[in-house]
Length: 143
Image 1: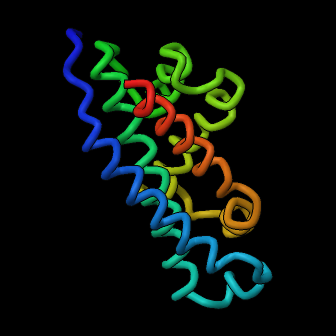
Image 2: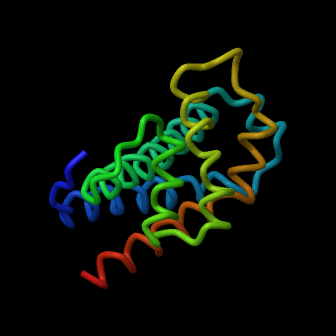
C-alpha cells in the first residue's frame, strides 16, 4: 500500500469525539454494577459511549497506519501498527489492542455483552482511552 497524507484535522476531529465520549462516560461511573444491570437507559448510554470511544481510537489508528503505507486487515492490527510506527509504546499497544475485539462485541452483540466486564471498563479502563489520545496528540505535536 502506498502512503497517503496524514490529515491532522481528521485526527483532531476523532480526538474531540473521543474526549467527549470519555467525559460523558466518567459521569456514569462510580455506581454499583447492580444499578447498571437494572437500568436499561444507563446500559445503552454506557455501551454507546464505549462503542464510540473504541471506534474513534480505531479510526485514528487506521488513518495513521494508512498514511504510513501500512495495510491493516483488522482493527487489532491497526493498534499494533501504531506500536511499530512508534506512535504507541509496545506494552500499551499490546494491552490496548483488545479494544478492537471489545468494539466488535459491542457492535455485533456476539452472544450478549457481559455487563460485569462493561462495568469494570467503566470504572477502571477509561484512562486507557485518554492515554491513547495523549500519544496521538504527541504525534500531532511532532508534525
